[in-house]
Image 1 (cartoon, rainbow, N blue to C red):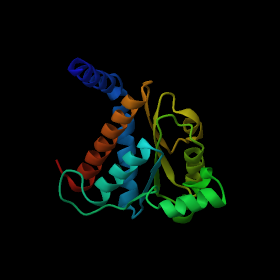
Image 2 (image 1 turned 120 degrees about the horizontal axis):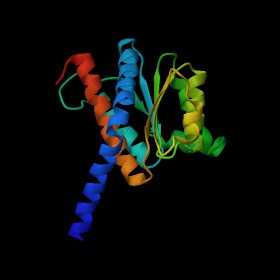
Image 3 (image 1 turned 30 degrees about the vertical axis):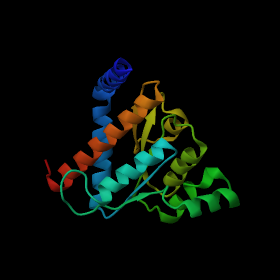
Length: 194
């Protein structure tokens, strides 16, 4: 079993090396968009399902509290935090609206929507992207495989960070690393933190 664990580590490293060079530019573009929004007193709304929701929470925590170094908190909202609201929306309307409805209520022109999805095909995330565009928000899509339906909705103003591997586990691992890279770049660009 220890050999199996070592092999999993090796597959993780190999997957990161396979896509790392291709993701460097969109990760930097995403951080630039977020920094521009933050400098203009805008906020970052973040959503995802399942493991991607957990990654959303990690990202917003790193912005609201801190990443590596002490700095002021940055305005970020994890859209998965209010279970009573989301179950009410799902019951009263449908599950596809659980992120779109809060985006329409909270999102403002110039805000960023960071949507995280390993497949890019979840209806509620597709509707979230549409709602963000309706509110004149920039979308940063952290996706996997071929980007799915979300990729087809993105405009020239949006940024797609697509992890083009087929393993869901590897996609989530690379998403987490990508989010940490974005946090590092934001801190460096805003505060000069090394």
